[in-house]
Image 1 (cartoon, rainbow, N blue to C red):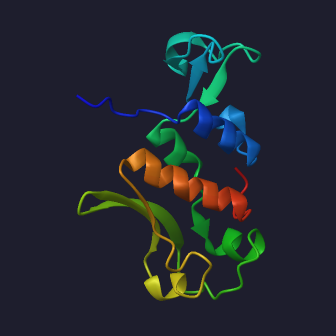
Image 2: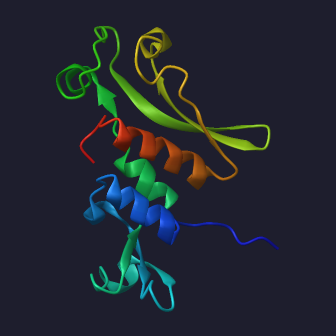
Length: 147
């Protein structure tokens, strides 16, 4: 039986941090990741030891740090020049298409997304974690949010 991924891998965690994701936003950590890694959830044992442990993010943890775009932060904070007068917010959403997980932004007015850099950006993965991880990397690379 294939083991299900419940959090970012060590490689994924290192990459998210290198892109600028704040380690304080993590909800798990890889304990003693250089020698004998073990995935630990924060509520059970604190934040770990910085020199031996590596932050990790669960699916919920990654969804929690993805930005929700509102009329104010869309125009003022992200430099995406579109008219959001009719839109209250754009949020990340997960769905399944065939055997793939899809992560994309959705809104109460989809015509607005068509004018943004997020138009046509669907992030697919074999798992929900993989799809959300891909979206989070895109958001970080494009500097679309304060994460």
